[in-house]
Length: 319
Image (cartoon, rainbow, N blue to C red; front, top):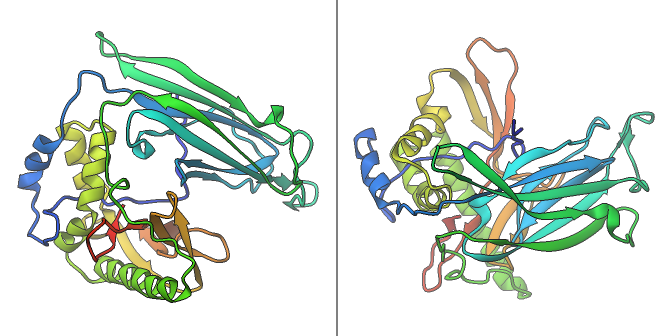
């Protein structure tokens, strides 16, 4: 059985609306979105089985961080499964970057200061697809291990490899995006003000705005993900109904997002994506907590927010 690991607690908004507008989105027009998703005879899903030993690690696909595991107890992963399709945009070679850092020392009850000789990450990339009987067949695509690599720095180890993904779709979003990263200090300062304003606008919508307004913000991302995951109409409907928990789920009795502060601006995807990360833990600067009915504890949530700008446009959009 596959074991799925989530990157922190990321709660994506799976809502739909018309681009550049804020219509009154209703559950009745979900089928319009479903009809927009092209179906393919070949719909492969790619994933990674990851095992670790005495380390924390981060995985980036095509220079976008998608998996981050912090060893806080001295435990390790043993073949945990991570789906990858959401970060594959077209057929061809996909670059996987591994960043490995020291793990947790149970004897000292603290993080190690250096990678130990047996610190390692093993990654098995697999491809799966439904066969004629409706069951899933899985084939190994690539096997990688840091244990076979020579390490230079004792505090961090970084390496990269590629695997070939034979996906039928072609997502051109970032191909048509501007490079936002620059060495010009004035442009960087202006960009930072724009990014902070976008984060605050989305935070305000979460806190005070309408369901329809937030649906408009996330429309392009959700349409992209629906294509990459080959979602069926019922799956699109399920995401629409269930993933947006803070305004529609009566099980949530408390929800709050903290002010956007104590952050650093970070670039990914070869400078085409920008985001704000908290300085103390490098997680999203859009964060807060929620409480479920009948529970006393508040659950911390970090809402990943990657922004890009299409060439020839002025506004930053959610990727």
